Length: 317
Image (cartoon, rainbow, N blue to C red; front, side):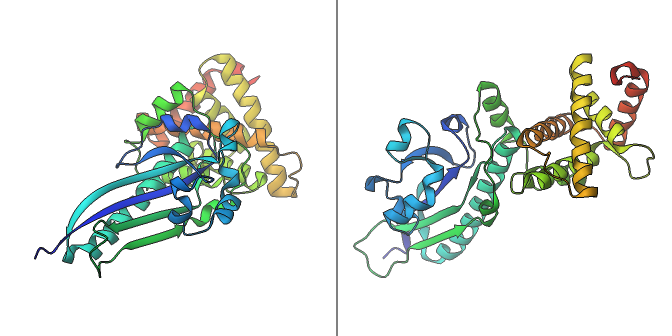
């Protein structure tokens, strides 16, 4: 008698905060995006998430795709599945290692997508299952783990991810090159604050994003106006023309002022979603540039200081 067992291993998580263009992203580690319905029994999402159809609809209504898809209850899922033959003695260890690795992979890939393109992409629950294929054999263990991703519940959805061809290509490239946690402590903190900006009130998001830029462009021992130094350096770093540098500089000063008014006076009424989206774009572009060229913080600051000093006219001086 053989001690080998044939199992079907599967993962499913329903995605929030994205439209159909996310289907074009090529995930790694065997994962893929797929359409399923929370209305149709054939997709078995009620079984997968260990609930009933009424509760399923209630919990995932905000994940429904817009337009004609919403009538059919269509959602986008992250899925992975395969058959595997395992020895009896391997089952528990394989299950522990595989689910841990896959959970981390899903989390990392979602964070990369959120980093490259605007949108609060997230999942609330992940279903892991490993089911014995020979149903006629008794006393064989099926493995199930339905885990909740707690950070998703505090997310305020102000935008939705939409990917054009350029962003799809960028995401597909970075999916395989960015790994968390990031080795560089500063870059790790920049990404952490950026990612947290999706999960808080606008005033807190603005503060977190401004802090990310301070980490990239300011030193602790510098004297002078942080608002001026940060705005000039950030605009110079990501601006592609003199006019764009000036425009970015003025907008960065304006948003930094709003941050200061919130931090020092508790005034947050002037902060809008456009301010957060603008700052998130700035942090995103700065992070991706710094990550791609692997420049060091002090070298970056010194080069930007030299440019600012030589091009004062761009900043109205």
